[in-house]
Length: 390
Image 1 (cartoon, rainbow, N blue to C red):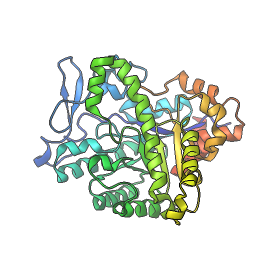
Image 2 (tube, rainbow, N blue to C red):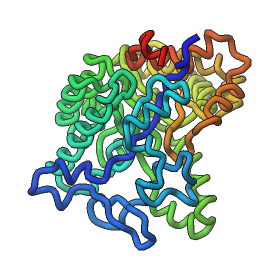
Image 3 (spheres, rainbow, N blue to C red):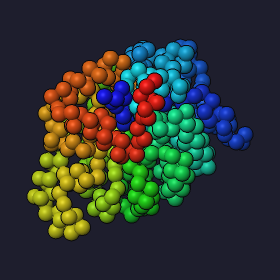
């Protein structure tokens, strides 16, 4: 059996400190995201005006710390967080053949760039990030799989960027699941049709990564004061998992899946245990409210659209993989580790969680979830005999 048994559908790359400052035009260099030193000795990203973001190490705690004690500098992080060669070494150790890669600084839907408040600068920062991610992945483009961040505030520019990055080998499109939160039309509005058409034309899945919409930052601060930091982070983590359920709810009623039968969406880092309830509830309400009479273009139930068009990623869960796979659909589940984030699986825990969740499954089911579904969706080239012999 191959030493590589996993294709990881959600990981993150910790952006290097000079990512934007070394690449931006001179006229923009003093306004792009950059790293500053905090009062506590930690390096922090500053994006636009206002307060710096959390410590750079908050997105790279794997093997080094936690929410409560994240690495303060790049030197304190696992090197695989920001160095592609070190990432590949870690992947070899874990039996992970490929990793799908998502951003941090620009936000999980590129929404942080809105803080720059300058359309030209915002677009430039998105393009710089995508170029950098492409170069990072070039260390082994079979195994490091970039996802295109888009300037979703300008749909024409977003489509252009998707096509540019597809030509460079990107494997998917990152989009907010709640564009209305940023003053943009709902998912079902014809405004987004050019983006859906580009995704279908290029056969690229569209990712709704958790944390791409309403993060209610003011409420988070209030909760920290009332509940404490760690209790708030625990609440927030589950809140944003379930928010992806709201985004899926919206997507299933948006008409997008009916109009574009070949389109694919991925709910990233949101887990899978909530999906059977949402689908059962959607079907019940759909039939009870005679939606198909109002919208004859809906030619199937919400659960059937999910089965045809939507994927979801899981990592820590033990109950859902053992009991709910048949209710979700084995062809719709991807496995992830979320490396190197605070909620990620790291080291021995990766295989322990897999064993605990999938040990009762047939090998064909395990293979689909850990490998086959992601390989097909992202068109992953598998390892050669030489790779296996290393």
